[in-house]
Length: 598
Image 1 (cartoon, helix red, strand yellow):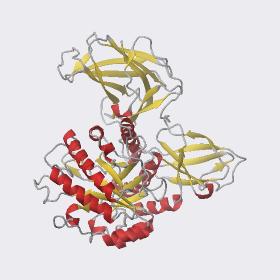
Image 2 (cartoon, one colour):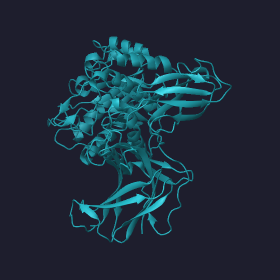
Image 3 (cartoon, one colour):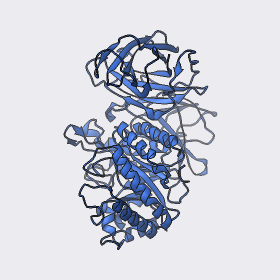
Image 4 (cartoon, rainbow, N blue to C red):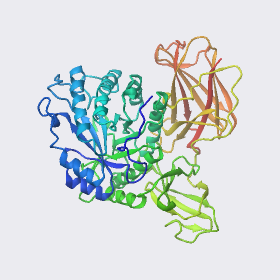
């Protein structure tokens, strides 16, 4: 079981105390700390380099950090201190990372010295930076490998006891995981299997690159939290210690830099400002306890004023001005999964609604469909200005949603009774209506019990796959599709994939599915050779649960692997595929439950 989390270093939920920015060696100065604090940030992240503190073996000096740390304490700033770098006196193979027992012992002593030096101020110690990738761990290995996870877990387990001995209230976070995609989730689980949670860490940190919008963080946050729950730490705080959005597209080989969101290049400064604010808001929605923007003054990611570029800084200033003293209360559901209306509570029971919309998952920021939503509020009607700039007609309040978060005061006594989206294709994220009864014959494989087993694959469309529960508690998978901007010339489709282990014996796989329209569906089984077996089907009625059967004793369309049309057991994956229903229905959802074998 994970350690209890009560150290004073962890900020309370809300604005501005959980909001921060990345600093580096060149700008970790008293002047910059003053400037960052004046803008509104209350957290800074900074690397603490082993070689800059232990300049000769066994002798520690903190002269490169003491003045700045003292000023951070005076300002009330929380410092996320990244324990980093290899020391040639302990580990000198030139490959990076900490791989030897001597390296772990030396690093543990360095970490304990830091914990002892700064025990009287708020510091969140983060072990390493992005240890799941070669860029920062070691050059002679594989990204997200079990080997990297084993080495990193061993380091964390070696250093935390000494840090806690030096400062029993020391807050140590591990992870610092680069990217939200399937390999990084697997690396996280490797670490959890290695017992890293039981090491004494008090938080798990992530760097949600690999997606185009802040709203897509929700998927990775949910998968990570489910893994924490699976390994006995459901209440361990999550921290987003690095993410930024670049104003410049760069490319290495065929790979575009992870912080680039695309879109019209004339609008990049505006998009960056939108994303900066939405990143902090989405993390608040997901109960992520600390959010740090990358970075303060870099040419591509920085928010400090540059020539002709003040949008991000202005957006920051507005966010803090509007929300200082506020904490997240609840999300208002509009009927469209891309609408975000977040209610915040502040001093003296004041409330504010922050509202925006976003593009489909994986799409560029200029693919947003701007539209109105109508709020129905309780009370005897409200005068103009009661909800800020939003037009009011009696009990109806109209908000225009764009990619820019807008702030609206909510008057005392006004409760939002209903919210209707006027998007062209409003889609609810999940329908919590009554689920079907499980079939009598099949044995349920319980594949909808754990988010971390599922992966959404955009392929030539966009959307998401999320697990929810019906009113009676039945787990349901909701595949949302959006073919507004397809990336292929043929009929576009999206998929959701789940791992399984079906041995030879059953004659069929059964799946119960439902959609709001008569819907073509495709199902794929991947066998042990990597061969895909495909079955096409159709839901014959709208809004009705129907059972799809996939025969295991008949040849199906097939390709890849053995490519012989024979299922080579065990079946390792099931894929749910949804193609474009038609030119007049580019968005929608399909619900699935009770995948079983018979």
